[in-house]
Image (cartoon, rainbow, N blue to C red; front, side, top):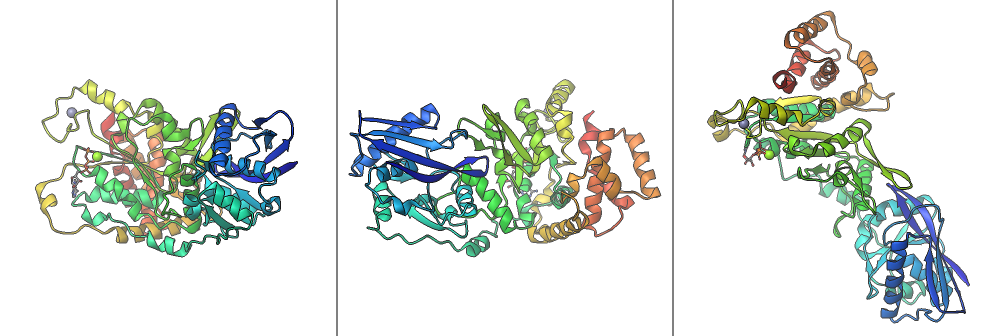
Length: 509
Ligand SMILES: Nc1ncnc2c1ncn2[C@@H]1O[C@H](COP(=O)(O)OP(=O)(O)OP(=O)(O)O)[C@@H](O)[C@H]1O
Ligand SMILES: [Mg+2]
Ligand SMILES: [Zn+2]
Protein backbone atom coordinates (compact mmCIF):
# COMPACT_ATOMS: atom_id res chain seq x y z
CA UNK A 1 0.00 0.00 0.00
CA UNK A 2 1.20 3.54 -0.74
CA UNK A 3 0.63 6.56 1.48
CA UNK A 4 1.81 10.16 1.04
CA UNK A 5 2.61 12.56 3.89
CA UNK A 6 3.22 16.22 3.07
CA UNK A 7 6.00 18.41 4.34
CA UNK A 8 7.88 21.46 3.16
CA UNK A 9 11.35 22.09 1.74
CA UNK A 10 13.12 25.42 1.42
CA UNK A 11 15.05 27.21 -1.25
CA UNK A 12 16.36 30.41 0.28
CA UNK A 13 13.34 31.76 2.10
CA UNK A 14 10.71 30.27 -0.17
CA UNK A 15 9.08 26.97 0.51
CA UNK A 16 8.06 24.12 -1.78
CA UNK A 17 5.83 21.18 -1.03
CA UNK A 18 7.43 17.78 -0.65
CA UNK A 19 5.52 14.54 -0.39
CA UNK A 20 6.97 11.56 1.48
CA UNK A 21 5.44 8.54 -0.31
CA UNK A 22 5.90 5.20 1.39
CA UNK A 23 5.34 1.86 -0.27
CA UNK A 24 5.31 -1.27 1.85
CA UNK A 25 4.99 -4.80 0.57
CA UNK A 26 5.94 -8.28 1.52
CA UNK A 27 9.25 -9.49 0.18
CA UNK A 28 12.83 -9.59 1.24
CA UNK A 29 13.05 -7.16 4.22
CA UNK A 30 14.70 -3.90 3.16
CA UNK A 31 14.41 -0.16 3.77
CA UNK A 32 15.25 2.44 1.13
CA UNK A 33 14.74 6.17 0.79
CA UNK A 34 14.99 7.82 -2.60
CA UNK A 35 14.92 11.50 -3.46
CA UNK A 36 17.34 12.71 -0.76
CA UNK A 37 21.10 13.18 -1.10
CA UNK A 38 22.99 9.99 -0.22
CA UNK A 39 24.48 11.14 3.06
CA UNK A 40 21.13 12.36 4.39
CA UNK A 41 19.39 9.12 3.39
CA UNK A 42 21.74 6.99 5.39
CA UNK A 43 21.41 9.11 8.49
CA UNK A 44 17.66 9.52 8.19
CA UNK A 45 17.07 5.76 7.78
CA UNK A 46 18.80 4.98 11.04
CA UNK A 47 17.06 7.75 12.97
CA UNK A 48 13.62 6.87 11.64
CA UNK A 49 13.90 3.15 12.38
CA UNK A 50 15.41 3.48 15.84
CA UNK A 51 13.11 6.33 16.87
CA UNK A 52 10.11 4.13 16.06
CA UNK A 53 11.50 1.06 17.80
CA UNK A 54 12.49 3.06 20.90
CA UNK A 55 9.00 4.55 21.02
CA UNK A 56 7.63 0.97 21.17
CA UNK A 57 5.96 1.39 17.83
CA UNK A 58 5.68 -1.62 15.62
CA UNK A 59 8.04 -0.60 12.81
CA UNK A 60 7.44 -2.96 9.84
CA UNK A 61 10.98 -4.33 9.88
CA UNK A 62 9.97 -7.53 8.16
CA UNK A 63 8.68 -5.78 5.02
CA UNK A 64 10.14 -4.28 1.91
CA UNK A 65 9.92 -0.49 2.48
CA UNK A 66 10.57 2.24 -0.07
CA UNK A 67 10.08 5.93 0.68
CA UNK A 68 10.24 8.47 -2.12
CA UNK A 69 10.57 12.18 -1.47
CA UNK A 70 8.83 13.88 -4.36
CA UNK A 71 9.41 15.92 -6.45
CA UNK A 72 12.83 14.44 -7.08
CA UNK A 73 14.15 17.40 -9.06
CA UNK A 74 14.33 19.80 -6.12
CA UNK A 75 17.20 19.73 -3.71
CA UNK A 76 16.19 18.63 -0.23
CA UNK A 77 18.54 19.08 2.64
CA UNK A 78 18.54 18.85 6.38
CA UNK A 79 16.92 16.50 8.84
CA UNK A 80 13.40 17.98 8.83
CA UNK A 81 12.09 15.12 6.66
CA UNK A 82 12.46 12.47 9.40
CA UNK A 83 8.98 12.95 10.77
CA UNK A 84 7.06 12.82 7.46
CA UNK A 85 9.15 9.81 6.42
CA UNK A 86 8.36 7.78 9.52
CA UNK A 87 4.70 8.79 9.45
CA UNK A 88 4.32 7.73 5.83
CA UNK A 89 5.74 4.32 6.71
CA UNK A 90 3.54 3.91 9.77
CA UNK A 91 0.46 4.96 7.81
CA UNK A 92 1.28 2.57 4.98
CA UNK A 93 1.66 -0.19 7.57
CA UNK A 94 -1.73 0.68 9.04
CA UNK A 95 -0.31 1.70 12.40
CA UNK A 96 -1.61 5.24 12.18
CA UNK A 97 -4.79 6.51 10.57
CA UNK A 98 -3.94 7.80 7.11
CA UNK A 99 -7.21 9.71 6.82
CA UNK A 100 -5.94 12.05 9.51
CA UNK A 101 -2.93 13.10 7.45
CA UNK A 102 -4.93 15.17 4.97
CA UNK A 103 -4.41 18.93 4.64
CA UNK A 104 -1.59 18.71 7.17
CA UNK A 105 2.15 19.27 6.91
CA UNK A 106 4.60 17.62 9.27
CA UNK A 107 8.08 18.84 10.11
CA UNK A 108 10.60 17.49 12.57
CA UNK A 109 13.91 15.77 13.12
CA UNK A 110 13.90 12.57 15.15
CA UNK A 111 16.24 11.58 17.93
CA UNK A 112 17.07 7.94 18.39
CA UNK A 113 14.98 7.88 21.57
CA UNK A 114 11.91 9.04 19.64
CA UNK A 115 11.84 12.64 20.73
CA UNK A 116 11.20 15.27 18.06
CA UNK A 117 13.93 17.85 17.75
CA UNK A 118 13.48 21.44 16.49
CA UNK A 119 14.32 22.22 12.88
CA UNK A 120 15.31 25.46 11.22
CA UNK A 121 13.10 27.34 8.80
CA UNK A 122 9.74 26.58 10.44
CA UNK A 123 8.32 30.07 9.84
CA UNK A 124 8.81 30.14 6.05
CA UNK A 125 7.54 26.55 5.96
CA UNK A 126 4.39 27.45 7.89
CA UNK A 127 3.80 30.48 5.64
CA UNK A 128 4.16 28.24 2.61
CA UNK A 129 1.63 25.81 4.09
CA UNK A 130 -0.90 28.61 4.65
CA UNK A 131 -0.44 29.85 1.12
CA UNK A 132 -1.08 26.39 -0.25
CA UNK A 133 -4.29 25.77 1.62
CA UNK A 134 -3.13 23.47 4.41
CA UNK A 135 -5.19 23.60 7.57
CA UNK A 136 -2.71 22.25 10.07
CA UNK A 137 1.03 22.09 10.67
CA UNK A 138 2.57 19.64 13.13
CA UNK A 139 5.85 21.03 14.46
CA UNK A 140 8.48 20.26 17.08
CA UNK A 141 7.49 21.71 20.46
CA UNK A 142 10.45 24.13 20.50
CA UNK A 143 9.35 25.60 17.16
CA UNK A 144 5.77 26.33 18.27
CA UNK A 145 6.27 30.07 18.78
CA UNK A 146 7.69 30.90 15.38
CA UNK A 147 5.20 28.60 13.63
CA UNK A 148 2.31 30.42 15.29
CA UNK A 149 3.26 33.65 13.53
CA UNK A 150 1.68 32.21 10.40
CA UNK A 151 -1.98 33.13 10.58
CA UNK A 152 -4.72 30.89 9.28
CA UNK A 153 -3.30 27.51 10.17
CA UNK A 154 -3.51 25.33 13.29
CA UNK A 155 -0.12 24.77 14.90
CA UNK A 156 0.18 21.44 16.71
CA UNK A 157 3.33 21.19 18.82
CA UNK A 158 4.62 17.70 19.56
CA UNK A 159 7.44 16.50 21.76
CA UNK A 160 7.94 12.95 20.53
CA UNK A 161 6.91 10.40 17.96
CA UNK A 162 4.65 8.48 20.33
CA UNK A 163 2.68 11.64 21.07
CA UNK A 164 2.37 12.39 17.37
CA UNK A 165 1.01 8.92 16.60
CA UNK A 166 -1.47 9.05 19.47
CA UNK A 167 -2.59 12.47 18.29
CA UNK A 168 -3.15 11.26 14.74
CA UNK A 169 -5.05 8.22 16.00
CA UNK A 170 -7.31 10.41 18.11
CA UNK A 171 -6.05 8.95 21.38
CA UNK A 172 -4.52 12.25 22.50
CA UNK A 173 -5.91 15.77 22.25
CA UNK A 174 -3.48 18.62 21.49
CA UNK A 175 -4.88 22.13 21.32
CA UNK A 176 -3.58 24.34 18.49
CA UNK A 177 -0.91 26.68 19.85
CA UNK A 178 -1.48 30.44 19.66
CA UNK A 179 0.79 33.43 20.30
CA UNK A 180 -0.20 36.98 21.09
CA UNK A 181 1.67 38.64 18.24
CA UNK A 182 0.66 42.17 19.24
CA UNK A 183 2.10 41.67 22.70
CA UNK A 184 5.35 40.48 21.15
CA UNK A 185 5.53 43.54 18.93
CA UNK A 186 5.05 45.83 21.93
CA UNK A 187 7.29 43.98 24.33
CA UNK A 188 10.49 44.37 22.41
CA UNK A 189 10.32 48.05 21.52
CA UNK A 190 12.59 49.19 24.32
CA UNK A 191 16.36 49.27 24.11
CA UNK A 192 18.90 49.10 26.93
CA UNK A 193 21.18 51.47 25.08
CA UNK A 194 20.70 55.16 24.44
CA UNK A 195 22.65 57.85 22.61
CA UNK A 196 22.24 60.03 25.69
CA UNK A 197 25.07 57.94 27.26
CA UNK A 198 27.54 59.21 24.68
CA UNK A 199 29.55 62.23 25.82
CA UNK A 200 30.74 64.78 23.29
CA UNK A 201 31.33 63.43 19.78
CA UNK A 202 28.58 65.69 18.49
CA UNK A 203 29.84 65.58 14.93
CA UNK A 204 29.89 61.78 14.90
CA UNK A 205 26.40 61.62 16.35
CA UNK A 206 25.23 64.03 13.70
CA UNK A 207 26.86 61.89 10.98
CA UNK A 208 25.15 58.77 12.35
CA UNK A 209 21.84 60.61 12.40
CA UNK A 210 22.25 61.56 8.75
CA UNK A 211 23.34 58.01 7.91
CA UNK A 212 20.27 56.50 9.56
CA UNK A 213 17.94 59.05 7.98
CA UNK A 214 19.00 58.22 4.43
CA UNK A 215 20.20 54.65 5.14
CA UNK A 216 23.68 55.64 4.06
CA UNK A 217 26.59 53.33 4.79
CA UNK A 218 29.09 54.97 7.10
CA UNK A 219 32.65 54.53 8.25
CA UNK A 220 34.10 56.04 11.41
CA UNK A 221 37.81 56.60 11.70
CA UNK A 222 39.48 57.41 15.00
CA UNK A 223 41.86 56.38 17.75
CA UNK A 224 41.05 53.57 20.23
CA UNK A 225 38.57 54.39 22.96
CA UNK A 226 36.90 57.27 21.18
CA UNK A 227 33.51 55.55 21.38
CA UNK A 228 33.17 54.21 17.83
CA UNK A 229 31.88 50.82 18.92
CA UNK A 230 29.72 52.41 21.59
CA UNK A 231 28.02 54.71 19.10
CA UNK A 232 27.59 52.09 16.37
CA UNK A 233 25.75 49.85 18.83
CA UNK A 234 23.25 52.64 19.35
CA UNK A 235 22.44 52.99 15.66
CA UNK A 236 19.39 50.68 15.72
CA UNK A 237 17.94 52.76 18.56
CA UNK A 238 17.52 55.75 16.23
CA UNK A 239 15.98 53.82 13.38
CA UNK A 240 12.17 53.74 13.20
CA UNK A 241 10.47 50.62 14.56
CA UNK A 242 10.14 47.81 12.09
CA UNK A 243 6.72 47.29 10.58
CA UNK A 244 5.08 43.91 11.09
CA UNK A 245 5.99 42.82 7.56
CA UNK A 246 9.60 43.84 8.07
CA UNK A 247 9.65 41.88 11.31
CA UNK A 248 8.27 38.79 9.62
CA UNK A 249 10.89 39.05 6.91
CA UNK A 250 13.69 39.25 9.46
CA UNK A 251 12.19 36.45 11.52
CA UNK A 252 12.09 34.20 8.46
CA UNK A 253 15.81 34.70 7.99
CA UNK A 254 16.57 33.92 11.65
CA UNK A 255 14.25 30.92 11.44
CA UNK A 256 16.18 29.48 8.50
CA UNK A 257 19.42 30.19 10.33
CA UNK A 258 18.07 28.29 13.35
CA UNK A 259 18.52 31.34 15.56
CA UNK A 260 15.02 31.72 17.02
CA UNK A 261 15.15 30.93 20.70
CA UNK A 262 12.57 28.72 22.35
CA UNK A 263 10.91 31.57 24.21
CA UNK A 264 10.96 33.92 21.25
CA UNK A 265 8.59 34.25 18.33
CA UNK A 266 8.85 37.42 16.35
CA UNK A 267 12.02 39.45 15.98
CA UNK A 268 10.69 42.97 16.33
CA UNK A 269 13.88 44.88 17.09
CA UNK A 270 16.11 45.89 14.21
CA UNK A 271 19.07 43.56 13.95
CA UNK A 272 22.54 44.68 14.95
CA UNK A 273 25.29 42.27 13.97
CA UNK A 274 28.96 42.74 14.64
CA UNK A 275 30.95 39.75 13.41
CA UNK A 276 34.62 39.46 14.36
CA UNK A 277 37.17 40.32 11.70
CA UNK A 278 38.34 36.70 11.47
CA UNK A 279 34.93 35.72 10.02
CA UNK A 280 34.92 33.40 7.01
CA UNK A 281 33.42 34.18 3.69
CA UNK A 282 30.58 31.69 4.09
CA UNK A 283 29.68 33.03 7.53
CA UNK A 284 29.59 36.55 6.11
CA UNK A 285 27.51 36.07 2.97
CA UNK A 286 25.88 32.70 3.60
CA UNK A 287 26.12 29.23 2.09
CA UNK A 288 27.46 25.92 3.33
CA UNK A 289 26.50 22.29 2.79
CA UNK A 290 23.05 22.85 4.25
CA UNK A 291 22.78 26.50 3.18
CA UNK A 292 22.35 29.10 5.90
CA UNK A 293 22.02 32.88 5.69
CA UNK A 294 25.20 34.78 6.53
CA UNK A 295 25.79 37.93 8.56
CA UNK A 296 24.71 40.19 5.69
CA UNK A 297 21.27 38.58 5.74
CA UNK A 298 21.09 38.41 9.52
CA UNK A 299 21.56 42.21 9.37
CA UNK A 300 18.64 42.59 6.95
CA UNK A 301 16.56 45.68 7.84
CA UNK A 302 19.19 46.58 10.42
CA UNK A 303 22.85 47.33 10.91
CA UNK A 304 25.94 45.34 10.04
CA UNK A 305 28.80 46.72 12.09
CA UNK A 306 32.32 45.84 11.03
CA UNK A 307 34.69 46.90 13.76
CA UNK A 308 38.37 47.15 12.78
CA UNK A 309 37.29 47.23 9.15
CA UNK A 310 40.74 46.91 7.50
CA UNK A 311 41.44 43.75 9.53
CA UNK A 312 38.79 41.76 7.67
CA UNK A 313 40.15 39.54 4.94
CA UNK A 314 40.20 41.25 1.61
CA UNK A 315 38.23 38.40 0.11
CA UNK A 316 35.43 38.77 2.66
CA UNK A 317 35.26 42.53 2.09
CA UNK A 318 35.07 42.09 -1.67
CA UNK A 319 32.16 39.70 -1.25
CA UNK A 320 30.24 42.48 0.48
CA UNK A 321 30.04 44.48 -2.69
CA UNK A 322 27.21 42.55 -4.32
CA UNK A 323 24.84 42.51 -1.33
CA UNK A 324 25.52 46.21 -0.65
CA UNK A 325 24.65 46.97 -4.25
CA UNK A 326 21.61 44.74 -4.67
CA UNK A 327 20.10 44.50 -1.19
CA UNK A 328 20.17 40.74 -1.48
CA UNK A 329 22.81 38.07 -1.69
CA UNK A 330 23.03 35.37 -4.30
CA UNK A 331 24.73 32.13 -3.37
CA UNK A 332 25.97 29.78 -6.07
CA UNK A 333 25.30 26.12 -5.47
CA UNK A 334 26.14 22.91 -7.31
CA UNK A 335 22.71 22.87 -8.95
CA UNK A 336 21.71 26.49 -9.32
CA UNK A 337 21.66 29.55 -7.13
CA UNK A 338 19.63 30.82 -4.21
CA UNK A 339 19.08 34.25 -2.75
CA UNK A 340 18.54 35.70 0.70
CA UNK A 341 17.54 39.30 1.41
CA UNK A 342 20.37 41.56 2.62
CA UNK A 343 19.06 45.08 2.76
CA UNK A 344 21.24 46.52 5.45
CA UNK A 345 23.05 49.58 6.61
CA UNK A 346 26.78 49.08 6.88
CA UNK A 347 28.60 50.82 9.69
CA UNK A 348 32.32 50.31 9.81
CA UNK A 349 35.06 51.55 12.06
CA UNK A 350 38.77 51.83 11.64
CA UNK A 351 41.81 53.36 13.27
CA UNK A 352 43.84 55.92 11.35
CA UNK A 353 46.91 53.63 11.36
CA UNK A 354 47.95 50.14 12.52
CA UNK A 355 48.73 51.32 16.08
CA UNK A 356 45.65 53.50 16.15
CA UNK A 357 47.04 56.87 17.16
CA UNK A 358 48.27 58.53 13.96
CA UNK A 359 47.26 62.16 14.01
CA UNK A 360 46.01 61.98 17.60
CA UNK A 361 49.06 61.26 19.74
CA UNK A 362 52.81 61.22 19.30
CA UNK A 363 52.74 57.62 20.53
CA UNK A 364 52.37 56.64 16.86
CA UNK A 365 55.53 55.23 15.34
CA UNK A 366 53.90 53.85 12.20
CA UNK A 367 55.77 54.56 8.98
CA UNK A 368 54.03 56.31 6.09
CA UNK A 369 54.25 53.05 4.19
CA UNK A 370 52.56 51.07 6.94
CA UNK A 371 49.78 53.63 7.10
CA UNK A 372 49.17 53.57 3.36
CA UNK A 373 49.20 49.78 3.33
CA UNK A 374 46.70 49.69 6.19
CA UNK A 375 44.28 52.07 4.49
CA UNK A 376 44.63 50.42 1.11
CA UNK A 377 43.25 47.22 2.55
CA UNK A 378 39.85 48.73 1.90
CA UNK A 379 39.48 48.74 -1.84
CA UNK A 380 38.20 51.73 -3.77
CA UNK A 381 35.11 49.92 -5.06
CA UNK A 382 34.10 49.02 -1.50
CA UNK A 383 34.79 52.49 -0.16
CA UNK A 384 32.64 53.60 -3.06
CA UNK A 385 29.62 52.06 -1.44
CA UNK A 386 30.14 53.99 1.76
CA UNK A 387 28.56 57.41 1.50
CA UNK A 388 29.69 58.93 4.78
CA UNK A 389 33.17 59.04 6.30
CA UNK A 390 33.59 60.66 9.66
CA UNK A 391 36.45 61.24 12.03
CA UNK A 392 35.84 60.22 15.62
CA UNK A 393 38.51 62.18 17.41
CA UNK A 394 39.87 61.53 20.87
CA UNK A 395 37.80 62.79 23.78
CA UNK A 396 39.04 65.62 25.93
CA UNK A 397 38.67 65.53 29.68
CA UNK A 398 35.96 68.16 29.66
CA UNK A 399 33.59 66.13 27.50
CA UNK A 400 34.25 62.83 29.28
CA UNK A 401 33.63 64.27 32.73
CA UNK A 402 30.67 66.36 31.70
CA UNK A 403 27.42 65.41 33.39
CA UNK A 404 25.35 66.93 30.64
CA UNK A 405 23.28 64.34 28.82
CA UNK A 406 23.62 64.19 25.07
CA UNK A 407 20.66 64.09 22.70
CA UNK A 408 18.55 61.02 23.41
CA UNK A 409 17.88 58.19 21.01
CA UNK A 410 14.16 58.94 21.09
CA UNK A 411 14.70 62.52 19.89
CA UNK A 412 17.08 61.40 17.17
CA UNK A 413 14.72 58.62 16.08
CA UNK A 414 11.92 61.15 15.64
CA UNK A 415 14.11 63.20 13.28
CA UNK A 416 15.03 60.10 11.33
CA UNK A 417 11.40 59.09 11.08
CA UNK A 418 10.39 62.47 9.68
CA UNK A 419 13.20 62.50 7.13
CA UNK A 420 12.23 59.01 6.01
CA UNK A 421 8.63 60.08 5.55
CA UNK A 422 9.81 62.86 3.27
CA UNK A 423 11.78 60.32 1.23
CA UNK A 424 8.92 57.82 1.10
CA UNK A 425 6.67 60.54 -0.29
CA UNK A 426 9.22 61.73 -2.85
CA UNK A 427 10.00 58.20 -4.05
CA UNK A 428 6.48 56.82 -3.94
CA UNK A 429 6.67 55.97 -7.63
CA UNK A 430 10.16 54.53 -7.47
CA UNK A 431 11.33 51.06 -6.48
CA UNK A 432 13.47 52.45 -3.66
CA UNK A 433 12.75 54.44 -0.51
CA UNK A 434 15.99 56.04 0.59
CA UNK A 435 18.39 58.67 -0.73
CA UNK A 436 21.27 56.23 -0.47
CA UNK A 437 19.64 54.15 -3.21
CA UNK A 438 19.68 56.95 -5.79
CA UNK A 439 21.40 56.00 -9.04
CA UNK A 440 23.27 58.66 -11.04
CA UNK A 441 20.34 59.32 -13.36
CA UNK A 442 17.95 59.62 -10.40
CA UNK A 443 20.40 61.96 -8.70
CA UNK A 444 20.05 64.33 -11.64
CA UNK A 445 16.31 64.14 -11.21
CA UNK A 446 16.01 64.49 -7.44
CA UNK A 447 19.12 66.41 -6.38
CA UNK A 448 19.18 69.32 -8.77
CA UNK A 449 21.18 72.29 -7.56
CA UNK A 450 20.78 76.03 -7.84
CA UNK A 451 23.47 78.21 -9.40
CA UNK A 452 25.16 79.12 -6.13
CA UNK A 453 25.19 75.55 -4.91
CA UNK A 454 26.76 74.40 -8.16
CA UNK A 455 29.43 77.02 -7.87
CA UNK A 456 30.27 75.93 -4.34
CA UNK A 457 30.63 72.29 -5.21
CA UNK A 458 32.75 73.05 -8.30
CA UNK A 459 35.05 75.28 -6.37
CA UNK A 460 35.62 72.76 -3.60
CA UNK A 461 36.08 69.89 -5.99
CA UNK A 462 38.90 71.56 -7.82
CA UNK A 463 40.56 72.91 -4.74
CA UNK A 464 40.47 69.79 -2.57
CA UNK A 465 40.89 67.25 -5.34
CA UNK A 466 37.81 65.13 -4.67
CA UNK A 467 37.39 62.24 -7.04
CA UNK A 468 34.51 62.13 -9.46
CA UNK A 469 33.09 59.18 -7.59
CA UNK A 470 32.69 61.27 -4.47
CA UNK A 471 30.48 63.69 -6.33
CA UNK A 472 27.33 61.59 -6.37
CA UNK A 473 27.72 60.65 -2.74
CA UNK A 474 28.00 64.24 -1.71
CA UNK A 475 24.77 65.02 -3.52
CA UNK A 476 22.93 62.06 -2.01
CA UNK A 477 24.05 62.96 1.50
CA UNK A 478 23.20 66.62 0.92
CA UNK A 479 19.73 65.47 -0.13
CA UNK A 480 19.34 63.64 3.19
CA UNK A 481 20.55 66.64 5.17
CA UNK A 482 18.01 68.83 3.38
CA UNK A 483 15.32 66.24 4.16
CA UNK A 484 16.26 66.30 7.84
CA UNK A 485 15.81 70.07 7.79
CA UNK A 486 12.60 69.66 5.79
CA UNK A 487 14.01 71.76 2.95
CA UNK A 488 12.74 71.03 -0.50
CA UNK A 489 15.82 72.35 -2.25
CA UNK A 490 19.38 71.47 -1.35
CA UNK A 491 21.08 74.53 0.11
CA UNK A 492 24.70 75.64 0.27
CA UNK A 493 24.91 74.64 3.91
CA UNK A 494 23.64 71.13 3.09
CA UNK A 495 26.39 70.77 0.52
CA UNK A 496 29.01 72.16 2.84
CA UNK A 497 28.02 69.66 5.52
CA UNK A 498 27.97 66.79 3.03
CA UNK A 499 31.47 67.80 1.90
CA UNK A 500 32.65 67.59 5.49
CA UNK A 501 31.48 63.98 5.62
CA UNK A 502 34.21 62.81 3.24
CA UNK A 503 37.15 62.94 5.63
CA UNK A 504 38.98 59.92 4.20
CA UNK A 505 38.89 61.32 0.68
CA UNK A 506 40.84 64.29 1.89
CA UNK A 507 43.33 62.71 4.25
CA UNK A 508 43.74 59.33 2.51
CA UNK A 509 45.73 59.98 -0.62
N1 LIG B 1 32.01 59.58 23.87
C1 LIG B 1 31.97 58.76 24.91
N2 LIG B 1 31.08 58.94 25.89
C2 LIG B 1 31.01 58.10 26.93
N3 LIG B 1 31.81 57.04 27.09
C3 LIG B 1 32.73 56.80 26.16
C4 LIG B 1 32.85 57.63 25.02
N4 LIG B 1 33.85 57.16 24.25
C5 LIG B 1 34.32 56.07 24.88
N5 LIG B 1 33.65 55.84 26.02
C6 LIG B 1 33.91 54.75 26.97
O1 LIG B 1 35.03 54.02 26.51
C7 LIG B 1 34.69 52.69 26.21
C8 LIG B 1 35.40 52.23 24.96
O2 LIG B 1 34.83 52.86 23.85
P1 LIG B 1 34.68 52.12 22.48
O3 LIG B 1 34.90 50.67 22.64
O4 LIG B 1 33.40 52.53 21.88
O5 LIG B 1 35.89 52.76 21.69
P2 LIG B 1 36.34 52.49 20.21
O6 LIG B 1 36.44 53.81 19.56
O7 LIG B 1 35.47 51.49 19.61
O8 LIG B 1 37.81 51.95 20.41
P3 LIG B 1 38.63 50.87 19.55
O9 LIG B 1 39.24 51.61 18.41
O10 LIG B 1 39.65 50.40 20.50
O11 LIG B 1 37.69 49.81 19.13
C9 LIG B 1 33.20 52.67 26.09
O12 LIG B 1 32.63 51.45 26.46
C10 LIG B 1 32.77 53.79 27.02
O13 LIG B 1 32.63 53.31 28.32
MG1 LIG C 1 35.84 49.52 18.92
ZN1 LIG D 1 50.30 54.44 14.31
